Length: 440
Length: 146
Image (cartoon, rainbow over all chains, first blue to last red; front, side, top):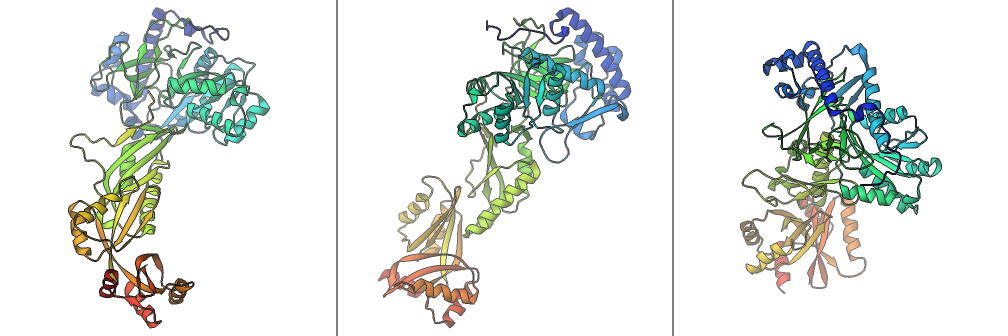
């Protein structure tokens, strides 16, 4: 067992609650939530009716499986805030999904929700070493994205000093680190590596900066990346998990043992399901995580399908926390790509490509991570009639594809033009995305 | 007066340029001159071939997409300032040159250069009025065989 690098303290007693008692609490809160959504959210009432289930049918936690699923598209269909469990006047804040252009997915919080959220962030921050006397640099984007504000209020709850550096301007991030000596860094894991790289290039030894701990999330990363971050920055790096639809960061987070993320089960019920059959997987197997919120007021969710693939571990953690732990997210059960924190669907890229005259409907998307940042490129085939002997014409055709993809996805993608028939034609299900990032 | 040029779009990858050349070699077709324009990702190969119809046919049989464009072959004095003189004449006309490349053979004591204009007919007419010698395909292929 790892030695404890700092005192193992618990932020709230619910973290070490007796599992049996927690189940009783979960059931009580589930019944309450189900009753509330049925009576206040027309969408859920309708969904419950379709599934032929009524609030009074939920008599035990096992009855959860009778409830209908909620998916991301339900949030899109009810844009902007069709799934609210409280009147709009009760809202304290609105957040949204990171990424894609067009309409975001919006979620909302009451005052009490914000307080719960801050406490849940505080739980994992404290279990990963954060103390009142620390200085914390938050290098997450502040905005609709839940990362920045979610962690900000969590750190504030603990009482530490915050440097709200936000993301970007890496030279300034390092300047602040040198001048203000933060103990903790909060950002995406790839940005942490980026900061380390930038420091090295500027002749600064990143491990000699004042940082002791880092809390990283909002994207898929690996144990190798953790090792690299820990070595380069001379810190302990902790993983946390969350998604705006369920709450934001703080749904789960690692303790000092760095062996799975403790899911805050007094606030969420987690299921791990086979994404095809929607039946529970065997314990320890990878499946899609599905969350039901138990205490959220403004935006309760019933059996929200995250599309994130991970596995659950019910064995007791030596840290003393009694909650179930989830593994790193291994991938997605849909084809969504997360590129530098931005959600991108291959279908969006396809849609963009098809709008450019001269480009054939054959393409191959390749994702790489050459250094620390994700790179995405798309190979597209030209249509015979659009091939010119003039370089200027070919370049401007490529620019048109580039611009169109940027308009649709909001990200810059490297576009490679290929002669007709250059891409392999598949006979079955075509493989149009190759992820070379080796994240697992 | 115009000369037929064939062009192909190629990926910028090792081995890509040899493929069309092999097809031409196998069919005993000689390349008079060529130019390769490239970017990091792709290249455009342009060829002047006497038997351009046959070249196009055999290349297409092998799956290549072949474009035919008309270019202009101009005699240029093979001495310092020779090309400048021609370019100055073109500049005066306001014609836009897309690209140029040279032949490997000479026409007497002159060099021969391929010009790609947007409006080749207008270019030929204007250049001839200025006393610049534009070669037609018969003259060009004759000189290539000398």
